[in-house]
Length: 235
Image (tube, rainbow, N blue to C red):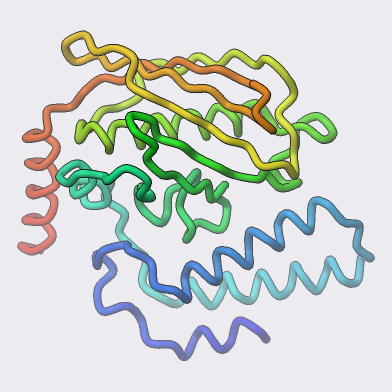
């Protein structure tokens, strides 16, 4: 069974080790995303589909024999707000992020960089994210806006959570074509950060968005992360 090879691999040194993925984890997630898009886009005979199911079940059973990973949001994000993001440089969240994480097999895998005061995401959506024929599901578009706006928070070195996200869909968002999402901080009122975004396909607007984010004092964010780390060390 294909999953058998995984059973003999050594487990990670600690289930609470940092989640920054190694190349093999990203490689596996990339292959699984490609399989999902191909599965949605193509017909397959029942025999092939049963083989896919049996193989997937084997790998699932093999992975279940290994330690469960501990995913603390504080541990994943507390280092994101302490350093400058140079203009033109890519911006990273954490590799398991469902929108931008390369190590998430169910993710969208957008890539983001800084362009002046804007966070810029580019992505070509595959068939698994289709809503109406040839068009991206509106919820996927909203998720990309939310994550791109989150990168603005990283650039601002300000942890915050989404309070409200409003998306205006101006045209169908195509599948299989490169999309660009841009977001910038438009206004700040005390703890409230208002971020505006726009999505385009071939320079033509397909959606606009406004996000309202509520700032978290950085010291509280870091204290929570330190407390969790201390608790793990004591345990």
